[in-house]
Length: 93
Image (cartoon, rainbow, N blue to C red; front, side, top):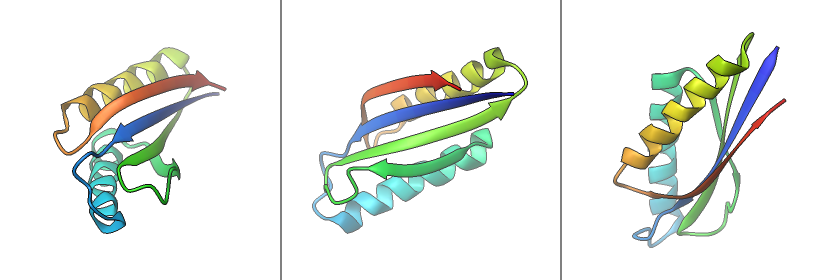
């Protein structure tokens, strides 16, 4: 069993409140869950208006499949206009 963990650092420069941030994070979370069938959660920077750290997790028998799915998630996040991908890291357990 292979577990792929993708940690994404997002910048949300036009968020003026936690409500604005939450709206964007929820939209990103819901679309990634629906499109890629992965687990998604905000894991850090909870009280900061213009930054979010999101973790995406997938499980598979093959590490190559986990890597492929998480690479597609990164591409999807980069295409979203509501936020900017500042950094990301990928880890396999």
